[in-house]
Image (cartoon, rainbow over all chains, first blue to last red; front, side, top):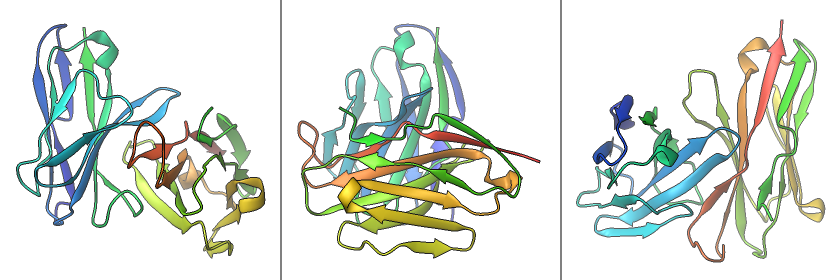
Length: 113
Length: 118
């Protein structure tokens, strides 16, 4: 049982490049979400999904896209990377939703130069 | 205004001291949920506790205890006889039915960094 996995662990991008952060869970959780963690800011919700085919925006969605074609996968796409997107990104899943325990992935540290 | 305020940015204690991490929240809902998560230096986030707004009983789990007071909108976390392994950043979080412009949000505080000195 791998839980929530994220790839890559580290990534360096140049301004304007695009990339996809991968997130997968093997717990059959319906609810998945993406957060970014910046120093002194806590975790801020980027996008979330309550099930396959359903996504919605969180607090800081600009510059990011998501899709949820399967229950297991919830990739986060950076359309045109900017230095302001330098952050640590966490994917999380929950069996019953945001009102319940979230299981977090190990995070992806992204640097945009 | 912040929905979840953790006023203590950093705390240092000597091993075996007790320490309390404060969390104050703001919500218009009558039904909501509060959480504490731990982020050790390795970086992963670990769930510690979940409390719903109708259950004001304090909870104890080993050296950890939580004090939930609706009257003061606080959900404080106490570590008794702290140990070096308790060194981490601790986040308080709030899940509410209505969160204004962004629904279905789980809002985290900015975290308190606890350093336990041997």
